[in-house]
Amino acid sequence: MSKEKIIIDDIQITLERKNIKNMYLRVLPPSGEVKVSAPLFVSDEDISNFIKSRRDWILKKQNLILNNKIKAPLKYTTGEKHPVWGEEYTLQLIKNNTIKQVVIDRQKGILYLPVPNRSTIEKREKILNDFYRKELQNAIPHVLTKCSKIVGKSPKDVSVRKMKNWGNCKKDGRITLNLNLAKKDSICLEYVMIHELCHLIEFNHGKKFKKLMDKFCPNWKNIKKILNE
Image: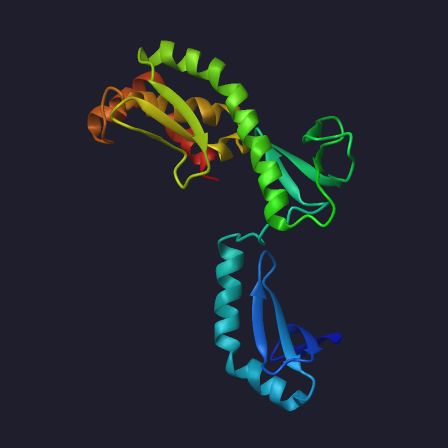
């Protein structure tokens, strides 16, 4: 297998020749890097023609990635950046039988992730998600007490799980929060908690609900923007 950098029609390509049957093209976030995997028997001319035929698609894909600041998929490896309560930390994998849980060095800005030998991406993701879940669960009691006093309502139960929304509230009074809130500034957790508690008064997102948010969390619109960044 060989790798080289080439330029075709003003597009820089990372070309890899492999023992494969077909040619593959990828445009990767976050930089829009173009990678082509080509069989060993394919000529330079065929590769060039292949790229030229896909030029419009490549440029469109690059613009989409760059304009929307699309990030590369996480691999949970050393050197990656991961946020905790709005602060960014550098991930450092450690293989140590004496350390069983994630450790934060706030002074050095390092997030130590203990992993077993030959760990998979899925296993490392689970370990980090368990950490976020515990962080959020530990923060909830104080925030719930504070926000319940503000709104004048208390939920039947508050649980944590990975979900698409930041939170939801059932009609029976049960609130669920997204574990990814532990990645955001703590003010975002207060905003979401107040939001869900307001649903105990007004279940929809109509004018009455927005008036409640204006009353109990006057800067909620600004916090919402921070949350969704």
